[in-house]
Amino acid sequence: MAVTLPERALLVKLFYESKGNAVAALREFRRLKNLRKGPFLPQALKRMIARFKETGHLGVQLGRGRKSTRSDVVEDVATAIVDQSMDNVIGCSSARAVSRHLGVLYSTVQNVLRKVVHFFPYKIRHNQQLMANDREKRLTFALTFLARVEVDASWPWEILWSDEAPFHLSVTVNTHNCHIWYTENPRTFQEIPLHSPKVTVWCGFTATFILGSFFFEETTRNGPVTCTVTARRYKNMLGNFVAPQMLQHQCLDSITFMQDGAPPHIGLCVQQFLRKHFTNDRVVSRAFPTAWPPRSPDLNSCDFWLWAYLKILFIEDV
Image (tube, rainbow, N blue to C red; front, side):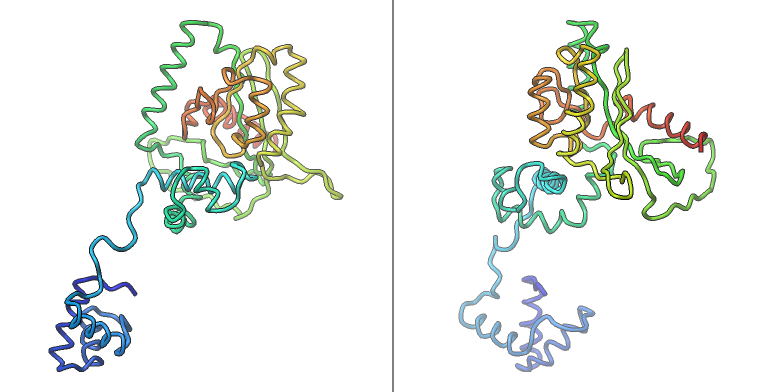
């Protein structure tokens, strides 16, 4: 266990008070600190006392130890790690590669990983609470949007709004982006299975037509099976499903494609596809000049209205 400078000083004091008895000094230290064992073996304590007599210090130098890491660096590393888990988004699969990708020291990445592994994957994927920097990004997007409307009033009508959502086959509604407001606490509980069978559905729409629905499935001997959305599968969906339908509507050269910043949406293969077919100017997404604000389901038409409405119809049909 790590021993602080004040604790080392206390050990020295107890050692001399016990007349050089290391065992008695450690026993009294554990009693005072309410410890069951540690922090040293008697031999280690004697060596520390000997170094103290020789050098005059207790073995803890100022400025040593693990330095704290800025919160923005922690989140950048966390995002990169999550991105890697979604079909090798940044083209690497190691902490050293993340260090090169972000321009952060390798030792810093290793330090951050201890915090990332258990906390940030959950936070990044599931937490929709706005963070401190999100307000500025949302405001910048809104002002950019309004400025573009001033130049071209028809531009909002040529945006393909897109998103995907899980539909539970057991009629369980995913309330991640569904909010039901009560005037009083209903005091009700809903028990759901831990791993409910579900299917992931993609849909896109403009002011004049709808694309979808597309089900992320793989064909097996036993029929279609729901699969996880990865960058490669998302890119295949765009190439085999979205682009052909947009060609039929004769709008592939004019439509603006909108997507949120989910890791599969910004994989290298996806970015290359979008730049080839839509160019940088006609994509609203993270990793593009017009970035979609993070954690903003209230701005996306799919999250704001579409999915909740479709899930209500799904329950009624069942």
